[in-house]
Length: 390
Image (cartoon, rainbow, N blue to C red; front, side, top):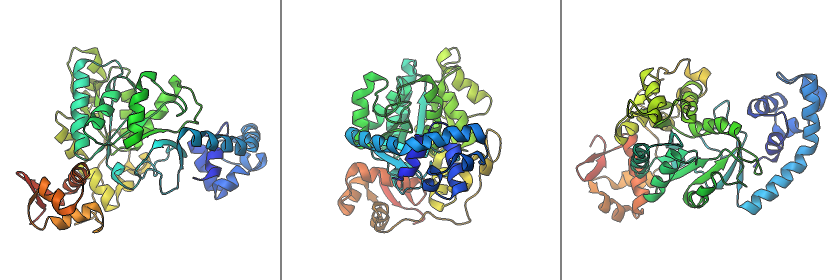
């Protein structure tokens, strides 16, 4: 953790954009945290009055950071700062990435959480919406994808629970500080998520739930994901904010499940599909197929170019994909679980045979195998897996 970055985030008047600008201008977070009002007022977007206010806040920020670290320790929360090896790899390149993340549980920054899908939808959903959230969440999680959502009532909770039920990973992004639980009835759910995945917020720990926090929360859901799946969103649903940010700001894939044409709960989703703002999906396999290119770019090292900022991705709701280098193949460490699976598949094997041969436990092996399929390194033929191209 970079304590100076934490101090900057606790300074009134500074948000992700200005913090990034300060670090770039001064050369480091530590130098930015010690800047004077005169130095600050020269930074674009600050000026004399705001510079004086920020300088006054910086004078108290180190004490606030010390208190925040102590509170985090008492709550079992880890503080992760941008630039560290434990900061989420998908989120880091984005211009609006939060400088600080508070984490209960664990984010596998360079591991399986690189392969995540956001699932969002209405809090006031129908039985159909709940059914589809559980269906897609469980199957996608069992395929090795991490399920990212907002921990809210309705679709979010159903997606989280379905991932947990099959032993998959899920991340809940909160619209309050982690010293609070919102909604309160999800306290037990968040405990379960933290044990096997992560509960995350960019907000200082004592920040109470407030309506204005949730739109910013939505950009983190998008930023942590290769793509976003919208399930049953009403006309003014916050899920549509997540979809817009995913498509227009982050260049992510956006997908939506069609709902009843006469249902107010599906109005937003249907409008998104009508204007071409989302890919229509009806099966979990459609989602995996839509994310294949994104996963390949992540492994080929071209993800930042294809899924970086709005400037790098181009303008408009949909962007032309940057093709990966010719014949590029994902790099797999032979000592990693994925490498061991590849080596074991010198002959076609069933899942049970693969577990016996590699010694990797079933749930983990299923996830690694699904990612290898997405990368087109292995193929499934009947009940057996084998190396692609054999």
